[in-house]
Amino acid sequence: MANLDNLRHSTSHLLAAAVSSLWPKSKPTLGPPIDDGFYYDFADLTISEEDLAKIETKMRELVKNWDSFEKIEVTPEQARKEFKDNPYKLELIWIYAAADTLPNPRMR
Picture (cartoon, rainbow, N blue to C red):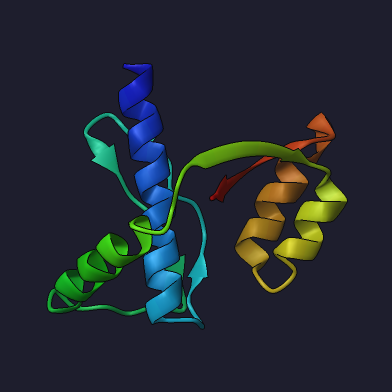
């Protein structure tokens, strides 16, 4: 089950990358794996059912260039710099900052 959760988590990041590429002003909030798949919530974004095919196409395009995912640890300060324009990510950083490091998956 761990491999399926990893796949779902990675795919949610792929979805976020595709949506962010198509709608650069959108703000990814969070996108965890769930029991029957994954999702990603976005702020400042309105899409229609017709946009789903465009998103899927972008995901397929992006994944061709990704060799792997790696989990790196970053400090809360590093995360705040990276997500300075996303209030939703900043809120999550403040919540998890007590741990001194935050997971920050990277696509390679």
